[in-house]
Length: 331
Image (cartoon, rainbow, N blue to C red; front, side):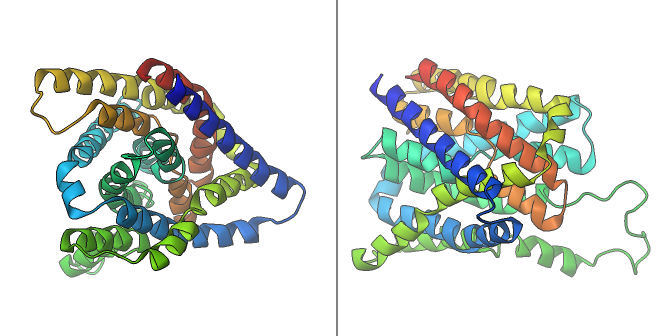
């Protein structure tokens, strides 16, 4: 019950931050221009520093080698999420950008802004290493596969001409692929991993302010999200049948099914490098609401941004109920 109470306390705090952002925009303290600035600051500074500083503060080479099961579980979770929600999108007959944004919204949970505070609160000692190892897989996929899912999908009849002049060259396709890896968050993850494996330690006099700045990402992202709630015509997503199927599947059925599967696997194969705490951690991560960054990615490319924002907002509000249900079962 102690961990369950901590979980509920975190969710209440998140709701308050959302309402602060909503109230500030409604009271016209700031508007869309300020939100655009927040988005840029989050994507280019706060998120990369959050990931980098948590990894550097929470892990060394020995800890990585001793707890690599957390990375394994994160990879397994994402493999299952990608498979399940590609299948769900196909079953619901979603096409084009709608299918891709739907998948992105349900594959990538808000591990950075909501997951990290919850993990650190529930596991004060092991939480840092869990966050560091999880972030390596999470951020790598988010800023590569996630970015690709949020790019516009050409409608039938609007694709480039099949002639040589209209077809992208192999070099251009390779450059575009590599370009997805050149972003601040991915660079932060890779830099942290290299430094950890080389045994390089950043002095606390430098790391502490970096962690403080990165720690601003969670409240600012929720305040940003609350502002979007006030300004965006997000309610159109409420008419989309896939919203309700997706939220129940992603935020209740999938994490509980994953918990049962991993618990059975750990019991049948005790030699696996996973612990029950790792299983509970990844279960909560699997049930997190849509990552705020998905809305930022789609807004940047003007690719169904209202649809993505609607998923972020509704899933975040729904998480107050769904995470309570999942926590009650797991804890």
